[in-house]
Image (tube, rainbow, N blue to C red):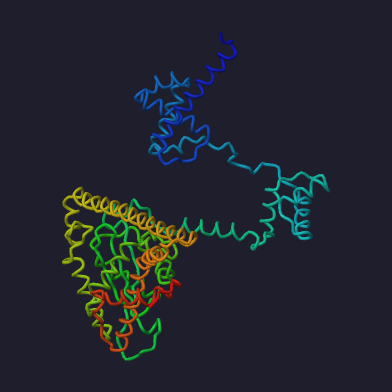
Length: 478
């Protein structure tokens, strides 16, 4: 027979387990974003779970089961519902006094003592507080010391630079529509105009000057693309100053047939200063991609690849700014009204936008189908990379085994290892060498080269036989 103490302990433990289980259920169903809550707020969240999920919203029954008054539970329910069932609204009010004017302050003598110690030793709040108590028997909290150091401007900016920058960034966030992080994934395919991606592309000038200069050798294509409909607006500029970019953005947004709420840009200088001020005036929220991360702006980057292959690579490069601008306007019309897009179910961006105005659900189904296809392709490519990597490791292990154990199959293993290296490296080197040669021909002859439309297999063979072995440190016998 179990003693009464053991029975009481088991009953108590069972009750605790039931409470923990209920609290876990409440957190999962009523706090899906996992907000950090105090113990009191978690207890109240458990009450809301009993009220909504066990008593079907009946306050009287829920209060009887919980053991609190009906009026108290009803007031919590009203607060919870007025805040759209945000679990953070269940936090208890702060017990700190609202008015501290009558609180006892330190005397002028103690204040002067704090400042004199700071000037003499340069100590921080903790050391000053300890020194006052040890040497003068004056008890003063470190936070009080820090407050008077701030009042007398005795805080060293270099020592508190991190806190200063954090406060500065906080104030900027409070007064401006700007965030130095990439946009959330949920808004990319939400609706037209919710997110526009903006980027700049270098457009090479054709002319007699063979000298290369970033300012004089290029024009600058400012591209805006709606993340949902893929509608694009492009402007050509002669420089990439922020003022010029803001004017180009204003012209581009006039051609987009809906208002824009957010815009995502990279960290270039053209997207700051006057450009940011212009966005603030237009009440457009500005996101910034992570540094050196073009995948944070994927759709405008992919559209620039289409520009390179389907527009500039087909001879649409001119040595006159007006002609280049005119050709760009024609290409924008083709891109928005004629060119089918795989991501839009082979519809044009404008046709997709018209479909969204008539039947939004059908348009969203098309985007979801494309996203599912991308996920499937991503898994397939990841599997292919793992298989390729496994084959490379197997070839390497065969070579190591043959080399260490002096086996006769060393030459065969060596050739397999070389083939694995060539498969992964030759394609990259051959394409890069061919593009370098084409760019030299373009600058020398002042005419676009069309050989990029088809890849030359002779380059692949030459890279395998000559370049890759030297790069990899492999000697191949004649």
